[in-house]
Amino acid sequence: MDLESVGDLAFHMILENLKPEDIASISCVSNRFRSVTSDDSLWSKICFHELSLTQPIDHRGNPLPSFKEAYRTWREDFVMYPWSLVKRVKRCWDNIETWLVNNFPEAKETLCEGASEAEIQELEDVLNVKLPLPTRILYRLHNGQEIEKLDVDTSTDAFGTSLGIIGGYSFYDHLVNVYLLPISHIIEETQQITNNLGFLRRSKYVLVAASSTYSEKLFFLNCTNGQLYVGTKELITNRDMMPCVPRNLISLDRELDGEKIQDAMLLWLEEHGRRLQRGSIKLIEEGKAKSINLFPEEPPLCSTAVTNGVQVRASALVIPELTDLQEGREKYLFSYSIRLSLQPQGCMINGISHRSCQLYWRHWLIHANDVVVSDVDGEAVIGMMSLQYPLLRPGDKEFAYQSCAALPTSSGSVEGSFTFVPGRLVEPKGDPFIATVARFPLERPDYIF
Image 1 (tube, rainbow, N blue to C red):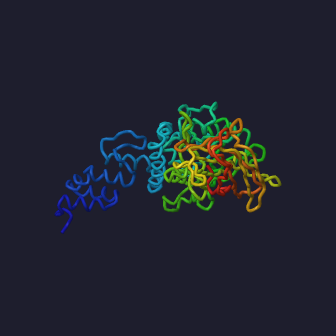
Image 2: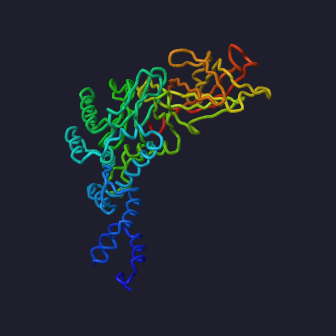
Image 3: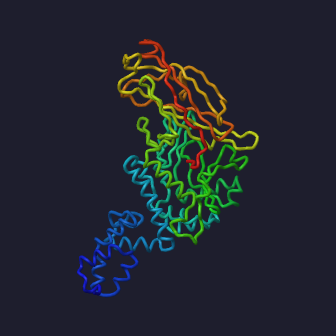
């Protein structure tokens, strides 16, 4: 029995199990085959399976008349790249965009439509670099973020009203929120920086991400080895940078299967998307301001302890832009975030429930590796401008504050306790009690954001 004698339904089922290239070949056999293979329901399944498209659009979101036309357009627009790598990069962006649509649509609106090959070529010509394939495709799908749409308010003590899709943190007067630069800004900013740091130009670095706030944090892609680096405290004076992705994962060999080609930029954004989707990092709101908060929210990087109804969550981040890696004075700067809340049953002391409790004292043990390097006792907690004595009540939003610690090593930990008074400090309802802060790590991570 040949295919000509197969009914349309059975033939359609056969086509659904073939590759698009094979379907295109079959369409050339006869008029009947051309008609059956043009069925748009077939191409809608192909577009969904390969590109997660639910409507016929090109890579810039422009509508097209059919799914068959959409698939043809995508293949033609990316004909110069391994198709399996294009699909992987598309999945990376889809993961981030889905989270942004559901949680942070304001930031989603800042993503630019894809860059053209001409724009990418201009970047390479002006800066005398050759972007790794994954980064080229990343920018073909989204040309960074529109800086004009970033609403930065440095008068607030929130984590930042910037809409950077990488996110950030704050402690005291240090405020960071990282966004992806569009190509025009990559060219402009890289040229300005390399005028002062010639080694960046000689080693083929381009600036791809930066903080939109007054606290400077710069990410550079090395176009030769594919690694992503972030500048340290000594970037200007001693050229110090920290790698942001495990080196052994980077592979730029074009002889590999296309999907296995991966530079640090792709690995970095894939990991960021996974953390967003898992809830490892979350959106925070301070008044009208929103931002992606990079302090970890899940164990083992985030610890949780409950004492007498008081819940304390704690986690930390390395702060590369304030870290000094110079030999003889190596010092890693970590910021930690403490989140306090009172559980629904209130503060339980000797079987008696109190509807509030207030913090009075703190005690910290800070370890470098396993050695205690700091033993801190002090009144209250230190906020942006003054001492704070948070009052906890059931149902209230978590009270969060951030501080920092410097270590001579890249690994350590913090543990401690808070002293609370049931009721209020001015009207105590019982004796003070100790609320534990479970140990949480201070670590230089494999991925730095």
